[in-house]
Amino acid sequence: MANVGRFRTVATLTAVLIAACTSTAAHPSPLSIRSPTVTASAHPLAARAPVASKALLETIYLTFDDGPNPTRTPAILTVPLAALVRASPKRLTKTIYLTFDDGPDPTWTPEILSLLEKYAARASFFVVGENAKRWPGLVEREVRDGDTVGDHTWSHPPLTNLPASAVYVELGRDRNLVTTLTGETPTLWRPPYEAFNASVVGIASGLRMKMQLWTVDTGDWQLPGTEVIVLRVMAALHNGMVVLLHDGGGYTRSETVAAVAVLIPELEAAGYRLAALPPEGIGQ
Image (cartoon, rainbow, N blue to C red):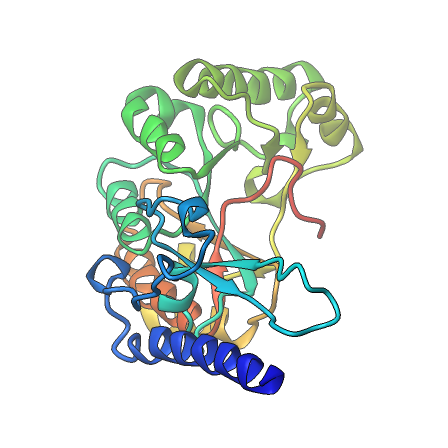
C-alpha cells in the first residue's frame, strides 16, 4: 500500500504539469489560460492553502504515506503558472546593446522609440546637448521607456582639437542638461568621431562619467543601405555586443530605422535580449 500512495502522488503531479505545459502549444496570453484544477479541499490542511491571486499560482500538496516518519508532514509546492505558460524553446539568455548617437531628432528618434516600445526592448541614446535642448520631450521619453541616456557633448566637436576648458564645457553642459531634463545624471559618455586622448578622458572622469565606445560600427552614417546595416550586425553577433547606430546628426536615418525594424525581431529570435547599457557601462 505504501508504494500505491507514492505512485498516486507522482502520477497526479505529473498529470498536472503535463496539462499545464501542453496547453501552451499555441503560446497564448497567460490571461487566456485556464489553470489545471487541483483539489485542495480533500486534504485536512486545505484551510491553509494560499488564496488564489492575480499571480495565477498553482498550489500542489505532496504527501508521503507509510514512510519512516508517521507525522505525514505535507510538502507544499507552489508553481508559477506564468513560468509554465511561457515555457518554450525561445530563451533570451544573451544580451546585445543597441546604441544611438547624435539625437534626438524629431523625425527619426520617435520612430526608433516606437519600435523599441513595440518589442519591449531597451537601448541607449548618446544625445547632443543642442538637440536635447530643442526636443527635450524626446530625451524625457527615452528615460521613461527605461533607456539609458548618455553624454555626447553639447555641439559634437572633435574634443582632441579643443583646449581643456572647452572640453569641460562641452561635456559638462550636456551632462547638466540631461540631469535637468530627466532627473538622472549621465554616467556614460561617448566621444564624437571617436576622438579622445588622456586629457579628454581625465576631464570626463572628473565629471564622474565613463567612456563607452562600441564593438560593432554599422557605418549607418554612411548610408550603405538597410541590408548592409543588418548584415554587419548579424555577421558580428556575439553576447555583450555594443552596436553603434545613429538617430540624428542632420542626415536621413530612414535606413537605420528600417534596419532596426528588422534587427529587433531577428535578434530576439536568435535568443538575444536587447538591453540598455548599465550605469557602469560595458567593458571594451
